[in-house]
Structure formats: C-alpha cells, structure tokens
Image (tube, rainbow, N blue to C red):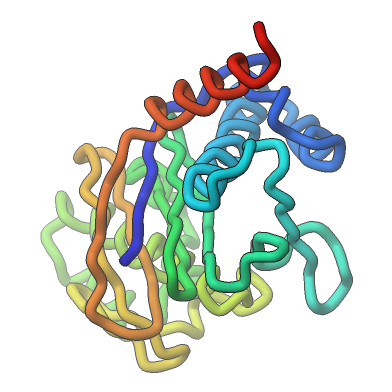
Length: 230
C-alpha cells in the first residue's frame, strides 16, 4: 500500500522546529520564500508521516539522503533504522506530496504550465513520445507532456537515479501505466486540473490512499506541545 499525504506549503517558521541543521541549510539554498516553504514543508511532512507510522516524535526520525556517486545530500531518501519503510517527497506550486509505503516508491507532481517551453520535448521525451504528443490536438499537448514528465521523474526517483539518467532515455508512452526500462508500474494521484502527479512502484497491485497532510502536521504539532508542556 502507498499512502500519499498532501498539503499546501507552510511558512518555514512553522515547520523549522522539526528540522535539523543540514535540512535548514538545504532550505536556505532556495532564494525565494515560496521555494523555501515547499522544501521545509516537504521534509516536515515526511518526518510527521514516518513518526506517526513508528509512534515516535517527529524530530527523532532520522532521515538519510546521500548520493551513491559523490556522497552529496541528494540521493534517495531513507529512514535510519527502518529499512521496511520507503518514502519519497515532491512539491510544485502550492502542492506538497509525501509518499509512504512498504515497498520502494517514487512520487512526482508537476504544474501543467511548466512544460510548454521550447526544447522541452528534446530534453524530456523519447522520439516516439515526441511524435505522439505533436500529433495530438494542441489543447491536450501540455497535459500529456506534464504526465510524461511526472511519470519519468517518479520512475527515476523510484530507482534512485534521479536526473543522473536523462529522462529522454526513459520511454513511457502516452497513456501507459507500465515502464520496461527501468521496470515500474505507474499510478496516478488525483490532483486539480492544473497539476499532474504520479506514483511509481516496482510491482502491482498498488493501493493508493490520499490523506490530509495539513491535519497530520497539526496533530504532530499538538503532540510536540503536549510533550514539552507548552
């Protein structure tokens, strides 16, 4: 089963108490307040989701992330001490998503307005996908491009390759829910019409549950206040 928590970005000051110094440093690399809020909320929501699963305070959840090639803090996210808990985070615009699963998982959300620039097809799509998209009615093209981009991102986050592998080498195809290389199954996450979001796992069947991330953050904050007597 895959549980997806969804919420809007929160101001950094609201969620900063749950973050450790390296996470705050990562948040501060974003130059704009919106980017900082998305990054901070994603990590706080991740901690809250895992904390609820393992019945521990959110700040006690140890999140590990290291690139297998350079050792930098941008590899696949893992939870220390809980190898059977798999997580992934994505955010765009006013949406933050966290996937929590008992199987390896990748998740990605994208805004439909972000894919219409010149050169997108060459960077993101295979030749066959490009031909199929350009054969569609113009009003459907950007949604198809967004689906393909979110699907590929989810798959590459599932495998841990990220953008070390060019997305134009991953063939999904219009309307597909399976990928052969790398092997993955795709499940769509219900979203407002201006966004597209997908979850990638290795094997079906996938039972997707969507939960309110804002309520989870509020519950975690209340629990922390109780614990500290505030």
